[in-house]
Length: 76
Image 1 (cartoon, helix red, strand yellow):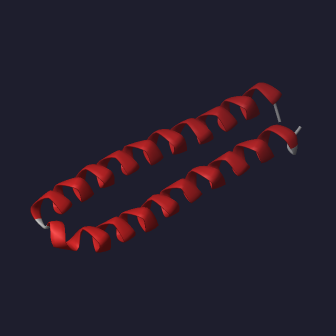
Image 2 (image 1 turned 135 degrees about the horizontal axis):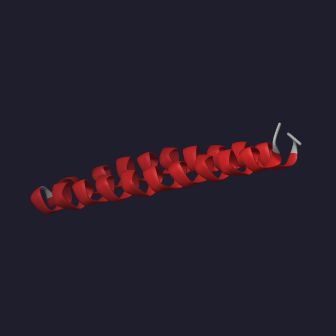
Image 3 (image 1 turned 30 degrees about the vertical axis):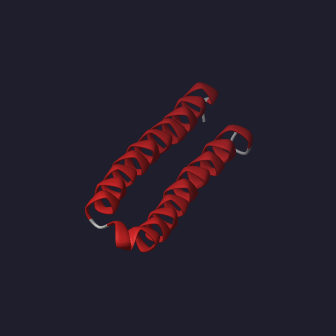
């Protein structure tokens, strides 16, 4: 394969994944803050669920990083 196309694919993979991960974390954090403001007694439960969601979103970004590194260094 062409090395330039592989580099573009790797850049797109991590760029799109990181952008969407940041968007998802921002939206979920905003909603969690709104929920805590409405029901402060449920704050700990909401915070726990928020952190679990953030962990899953960040893991998707890490998987995209692994895929882009594989594209760059394995496929030559």
